[in-house]
Image (cartoon, rainbow, N blue to C red; front, side, top):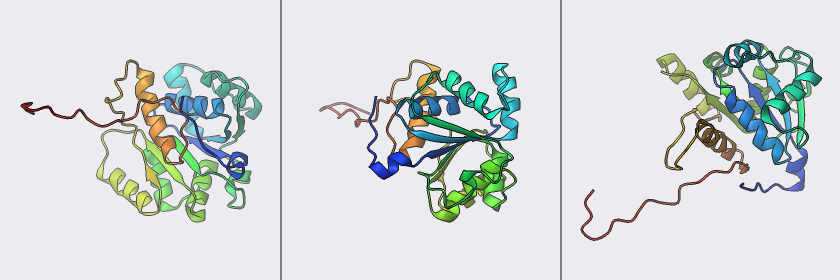
Length: 221
């Protein structure tokens, strides 16, 4: 597994993880698995529609009670004790992560619905997830979104461009194959690793690109 270099002040600052109702909650689960196992502090907020998507994708109910929800995510990620995880209610716009005075490493929204992308691009904050993301932009902190949609409409592309122009990093849920994936989780983990790369966090075991094969004399491409 890779290692993440952090100075003492960074170790005390949490990373906000936002989970929306986009399909692909496995991306959020794997993100939590690697971050918690690497002893990171996580402030998590799931949007209202996330509850419905959990039911549709996995036939399980995500608890509303926040303490139970923390245990739910830890069980899904199979990390019962390591790291620190605090869950916030989607409607609690008075939570710590709603303020710029609450210091963080930034925020990762994974997976990110195109509805959330549109609201962030327009500067709307109708719930805690959107407010926390807006705070990262106004404070100049890293904001990374992992959109999970296909195909992109022109409206989607324009909204993503607006976010990119505002300083947000866009990491689409598009895996590569040069690391020779053997399972679906290998493909998921590639996207998670590239998203965390945007925060200079290296805690996902990943076969990184080492350069292509050098042609030999007479070899034709």
